[in-house]
Image 1 (cartoon, rainbow, N blue to C red):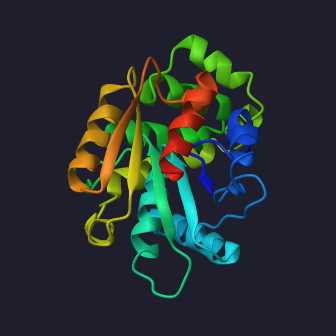
Image 2 (image 1 turned 120 degrees about the vertical axis):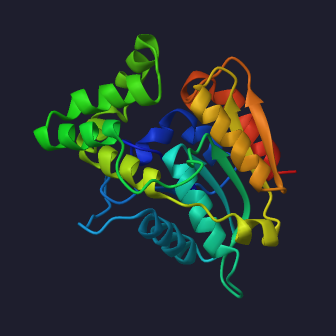
Length: 243
């Protein structure tokens, strides 16, 4: 089961879908507010985790989970709840690719966050997506051009209003590693060798909190190796799931 990040939907996995589907029964969800999924005014990472749990229950058996970026945060939160349940489907292993969990939650939105929230109100969706990719993910023009040519780009633009709310939710998020530590759930953290410092630091911090986790560095890659190095990406995912 794969969980996409901010400003995307299930089509985010198009580049690696056939490779993953050749190995696994693939369930690619649209997170709330995306694609075929509904939405509501009440929003939190906890609700996102509940959505994942509902889909795992619908699948009806233990699953491998893969989450990218914000989807990795959601996967961690859902897994921490799933592993505490008895007699219900649970994650067998978890792969997360550069989830950002802050060192500590903040009481008030940062100035940058307030700026993004204001930008979301103006309705210029593509500007918001482009600023997010340049300023937060720190993508180059060439990398953004690659994304704009991807089939998921229209969905990214359509989902732009959700960028600010998800970033705000991250700022307020407090991650409790205890259930994952107690369960010993095997976790692989994928980390681009050339990714932004704040993402690399977040992965290192998470790994120190989760003894059953391991970091695997993707050489010469950044935040979207599923697009820039799909064979490498699938190899590092499947080698862990199949070990």
